[in-house]
Image 1 (cartoon, rainbow, N blue to C red):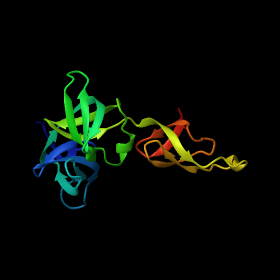
Image 2 (spheres, rainbow, N blue to C red):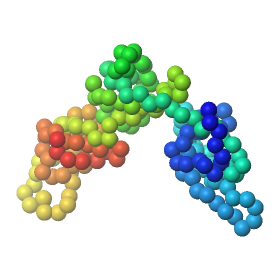
Image 3 (cartoon, rainbow, N blue to C red):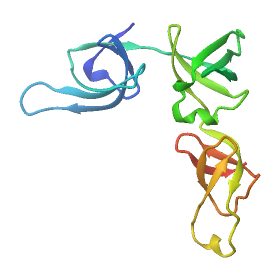
Image 4 (tube, rainbow, N blue to C red):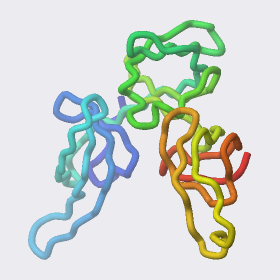
Length: 187
């Protein structure tokens, strides 16, 4: 693994530090009036989600880790495990549903997800930013309510509650942004 200097750390870099895998979330370079410059780095543990603030001087050496990203197709869920299939080798992989967190309801059968691996260990699963869902429950449109920029609550076919524009009714397909849980457009 390549070693980099402490002042070369950038947000998004994955580092091996204190026996764990950490992703650099925020990096700010500080030049105090007295003493040497350093990088103040906010790190997030990729295995358990802990956060850590660490200072790295320019002469400190840190191991940068390259994660392998694979696009895999979601097949099904059983007993809290998600089963994915590699589209090239047709090899099936079982992963914990916890890796997706609160975005889990947006995972649909046959969807292609990007899985980051460190060796054989899966560290994260990311799904497409925009997913098509069906509105299963919402309030009827009240005439004259569309003049203002207002939204109404809705429940999607996957059980997620979001706010939608008043012109969208039950049974309509909409596109939802999975990063911020917001209505994006009609499908």
